[in-house]
Amino acid sequence: MTKYKQLYFGLLALCQSSAYAVDFDTSITANAQWMLNTRNGSSQALNLTLLPEFNASFENGWQLNSTVRFRAEAINGLQINDISRDTYSPYSRPAQLDDGIELELREFYLQGEIGDTYLTLGKQQIVWGKPDGLKVLDIVNPQSFREFILDDFESSRIPLWTVNIERSFANWDLQFIWIPDPTYHALAKQDATYAFTSPELVPTAPPGVQVNIQQANRPTNGFLDSDVGLRATTFWKGWDITFNYLYQYNNAPVLRQSLSIVNEAPVVTITPDYERTHVIGATASNAFDDWVIRGEIGYFTEHYFIGNNPLLNQGVVKSPELQYALGLDWNAPWDVLVSMQLIQSWMIHDAQQSTRDKLDTTLTGLIRRNFLYDSLTAELLVIGNINNGDGIIRPKISYEWLDNLKTWVGADIFYGDRRGVFGQFNNNSRVVMGVEVSF
Image (cartoon, rainbow, N blue to C red; front, top):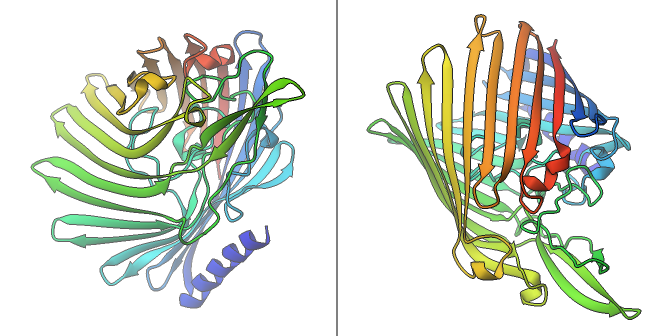
């Protein structure tokens, strides 16, 4: 926590010395949720989240934005100790106040212009690409998988200490990001509610074979192990287009395996490691009357997949990967939005040695309608994987009683083979009830 405080107060002092604050804006949002397992009626989660925000505007046009998150969870399986914390850097790791209570600095950045250059310096989120429910290029920030992909991306995305520089040249907007923050995906531990068990995501040992998971080998050189990225954005003949490049450590660890004999019994040792990859991508979107066409593509030079033979190449398969998403949105009559997506992942090499298929295909569908002057919203999101025949169905109804008071009820219904990425949580289907109030 010492380094964490030094960063916080150091940046605050920089702001105070640069100019006098002329305007302050503070707010707090409280969010409470209760989730019930549909199979046995037990409480899957009962949590409270407080989000105080503090924003200051300075005479020279700069702004300081700060958000803290206090989160309390009463049910085992989704508490603080149920998530791997050693994937966070010391600068970004939430403070654990109790088994079920954490305090996290979500945002703390200084934002302003120097000439024609726009700077955002500090802890922030960088969002590239926006498919519904799943990600292709939205990988700059790692993600907390406390609740798999059920939490909204704004909340599950892990903010990083970042230098974000933006500047316009002719018809192009250019963005450069430098991230000296070695923080990676926060995964659920083995006995947590949303621990991964699918053979596509984690190695699976035969019955009776002991599994020993070692501590992850993390990059240790803050400067040389930094992530860097570039994005160029333009508007051409009605199309919004971006070209993206990111050089990063893959946020998901490589799970290398080794087999040994201990006391005449086989033991599988899993050593998590992190490897570099280059990501080259692009996005495009255009509106045609009531229709919007959008696309997103990303090529990863090096990805590591779970191998089907733990004795070959330490149980991993190294291959480039091509991911893309094609979306079609329709603003239908009666304030109805219909959105459909095709998301595919190509494993370029040696797919026959992996636990997943060479071409993995997922379809999504979203339908949403607003009622009562936009105070009532009903929606249904369906995500289905074609290869494994599994997926998730997410109906939700929310009502905005006042500008600062909203309630909702919904469900997260998993289906399919338990070997699939979605089907592995077949027993975790739930009903969700929540309320949110802002001050």
